[in-house]
Structures are given as C-alpha cells and as structure tokens.
Length: 382
Ligand SMILES: Cc1ncc(COP(=O)(O)O)c(C=O)c1O
Image (cartoon, rainbow, N blue to C red; front, side):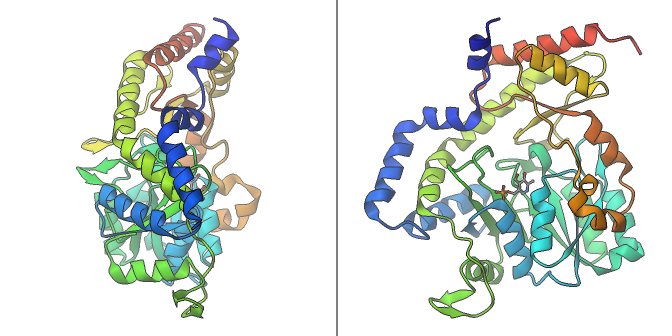
C-alpha cells in the first residue's frame, strides 16, 4: 500500500472534524468576529445552556481548559491546602497538576486493569489507611471514555464521607447504567481540547453540576472572584471561555450524537476484527454502560514490538500514557506517599492506542486488524 494511501486512511480527527463541518464553523466564527464580543458573551451563555441540556444537568459553566475546570471545582469546594485528593496515576498529568494548583496534594490509587479505571477495593483500602485520613475528595476519571464503576466508588466514598467528583475530559456522551456521565455526582469537569470527543479550536473546558450554590462559586472563581464586576468576593483567577470556542462548540455539539454512534460502530468493528488474536486484549464497555470510545486502547504483552510493526505498516499508534503520573520526576513526593501501584505499573507497559475517530472508515479498521493479526502470527506460541 502506498504511503499517500495510508495517510488518507489515517488522517487526524481535528482536521477532519473541521472539514466535515466547515461551512457551519466558518459561519459561526464570522458571526463572532462581526459581533465584536470575544470573551464570556452570548455564545458562551448559549453553549453553556446547550451543553447542560446535553449532559442533563442544571448548570454548565465554561472555563478556559479541562485542567482549570478541575482546579476551580476543587477551589469552589474549598479543597486546598492541607487536603489530599485521590486520583488514578494512570491518567493525563493534567489531573494531578490541577489538584496541586488548587493547593491540595494528589494521592494515587491503583486501577482495575480490565477497564483502566479506579479500583473501588484499592480506594477503600487507601481511605482506611493513615494516608487516607486527610483525603477530602476523589477524582474519578472516565479514562478513554469508559465510565468508572460509579456505584461501587460511591459506596466507598459515602462510607468514608468524602466527595466523589467526575473527570469527564475523555468521556463526553458516555453513560453509566443509562445516566450520562457529568451528572452522576455533585459535579464534573470537562475538557474541550481539540482532540477530545467534543473539541474546540483551542483550549476550553466546563464544570457541570446540579448544585446552584456550587455553580455560582465556580462562575465567580473563573473571573477574579467577581459576582459584580470589579468586586472580588474571593481570590479568583482568569479562566474564561471565549466566544469563538463557544460558537464552534455549539456547532460541534449538534453532531456529537452522530459522532458517538460512529465511534461505537468502529469500536465494534475493531472488536470483531481482533477477536481470537492471541496475545491481544481488546477493550470492552463496562456491563450496562455506554463507552464514549474517545480512545481505542488494546493491551499486548509485546506492546513495543507490535507498535513498531504497526508503524512500519503505516498505521499511526500512540500510548496513553507512556508513564503513569507517579513514575514522573515531578510527582516523586506524591508517589512516595501513595500505595504501591502494581497494576498501574503493569498496565502502562501493555497499552497501545489504535486509530479511532468518527471519520475513520471500516476499511481503515480492517487494515489495522490485518496488520495486528500478521504480527501475532509471527509471535512464538505461549
Ligand atoms: C482525563 C483528563 N483530565 C483532564 C485533562 C485536562 O484537560 P485540558 O487539556 O483541557 O486542560 C485531560 C486532557 O488531556 C484529560 O485527558
């Protein structure tokens, strides 16, 4: 297969997403430019209302990024200096960065290797230990679009009387037992980074909640602690969503349900294509839940060799993430205070992200599966 043919099979999501909606996006951008109101205006207000309706919450508050959404949410809950926040180490470093920026200390807990999400038993164990005594919140990350085991995690956090928050940066449109993520608990954080299931043309994020008082604090914190202009009721920050991002997000939100269906169809095609391949574990949605398939992540003992083979075949791959947060120098202190993360250490060595986005063709999925089968056939039988 020629290189240009492979490139056309595997083009990037943000570019394709724009190309498929170019007319509507261009119109939205021109509308904002002509209106001359660029930050926190009518487009942001309309997007917030439309996104809240999509998620099924009373409130959605636009902020400048997903990292800010987590930080502001923690600050709004007064979870800062002297408090610890538990989160998985197997996630984007942004999650720990946001906890530190809020003034709190991150504490890592192990994941369930089958779903790559927080392990309720490990969490219970940690919260009962001396290190768990200053924990004020748990950040449950719906990693790759896979909903966490909300019922089990909620039982643990209720038992220990701490708050359970959602990180939905990778899970727009996922459902836990019929309920849309982002509205499962007290509040949730979203990212609209361009590669996300709902992506802007720059940075963006949101907090969703049904709690009116919390929504009011988040709104105030995102803009200098203002409730009235030029009067800071508290020390806020500048984390505003701009009008261009909001206008583009409004266009893309309309196609999100179709895009989610495409992702699900392609994930099913992968599952069929990978079935029975020795040494390769395909991901699956938690029982009774709808995965948002932000990323399609397989696990393979011979991950590095498979990755090399796929790249030689012209199939772009990635690893989300090559190092867990506790393995990174900047988080050595938090790592020392956290329990041993045996399953996280193992998962990180085996994960491999295959191409998946709504504009990928079934032909491209077949090419990937064929290349993986070819690789598996060359491996010694275990
Ligand atoms: C799980 C998770 N949480 C938080 C974030 C932070 O979002 P942002 O990049 O918009 O700050 C990301 C982004 O990569 C993420 O994947």
